[in-house]
Length: 264
Length: 264
Image 1 (cartoon, rainbow over the protein chains, first blue to last red):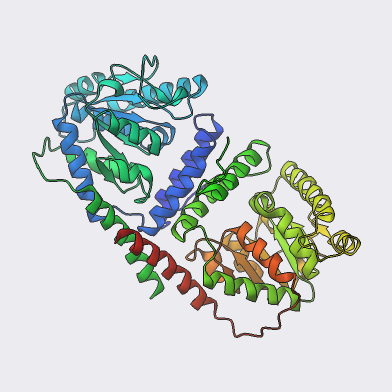
Image 2 (cartoon, helix red, strand yellow):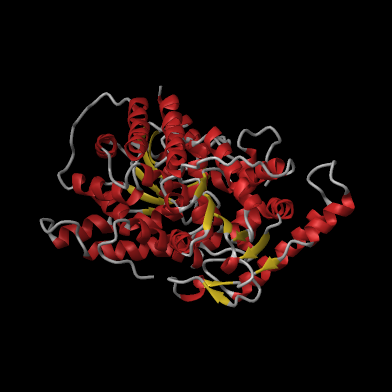
């Protein structure tokens, strides 16, 4: 499919194609496409742009990743496909590790996603996100990003079956965890473990959004890209009192405003 | 997957499972799952219920089907899977014919969908939608519903490729056509042919919704079920002046209201 450069919804259509291709290649569960469609609809309603409240949430999230002792970025299929490179950049800049962790776990999909993320890591190593970073130093930063997920040897309490599996050196011991596009049950279970849980979710009403410590209501690639650009400046030391409920209300109001604008 | 009887989102989860199963069975294009997800999100925002303005649109649509000379219900993959039986009931009650017509046409999917709709027709024949209909009469009514689509021998003007194909005895000569979940380009092309086009679309802002003669902003199964129940009463002779733009504004306001309610 060819999408004209000036198509107003070009980014959204490119992302959709990535998801369709990845599904055909066996990287995603069936429900991944449905989840992507739900995200598309909410993104459409917030105008396919990063709102001011999302920008604030991204700053707060970044601040927490910088301040963490053992930050982890947990990647599922959709996140890897849509924003894998950006996640590795972010991990390199914030000293986080990455864990491939999928809800409907099969060995085939784990193998494909791990191979994908390692290829992305190789690519990112040779392509620093800014000209101001010295190549040799960037290569070392990316090289030091650990990729967990291959041998899950721990379990998230209160979850049953394969969805409970995680890595003792990754998610299990993390104090701050960024889990874009997370399932509601797992988000609750991670919060119950006492972790600070940062999610990226376009539906401000989802159980994930309302359960998380920090909810970024934004498209995952846009959010990660912006966090990478902010992270290049180094730690923020914002030290704000974060009110996640207020952030969700802001996001809902954005949707409400856009439907009002369009109907007037 | 087992969904508890009292799950508040049971219907939505059952429909999702139907779509996932149908995709695995080869009945649907990949993009069908993404489209379903978009619909889920909009349905969530309107509260997974039929709004008053949708009820009015359903009544208007039914009135037009009854008044038509050659009414056709055009069924794509998602509609067949989600509401195939309801569509056949509606066709039987309004003297409409049915045409299987898919946007990403492949012979395999056409074959599977035609076989599915014929099975559904057999089922509906033995299961009248009301106890008040005499079995023998119902069987004749359903038997007389023509299923087009197997041998497309006409083309919708201004469309290119397989998506232009249709049946001369079905869509091509129809004066009123109900096309649930239609694509924007095709909706425009059908309107350009001078037909009255009735769509069912959960996104009140889509090109399909804004182009159609009558837009029903409702989930396809709920909409069809309600139209079947209304059709059992016979023609309505409502003769209203239909303002489709006003109906879309109502639907947008419903979404706006629900986001406001939830954020207050």
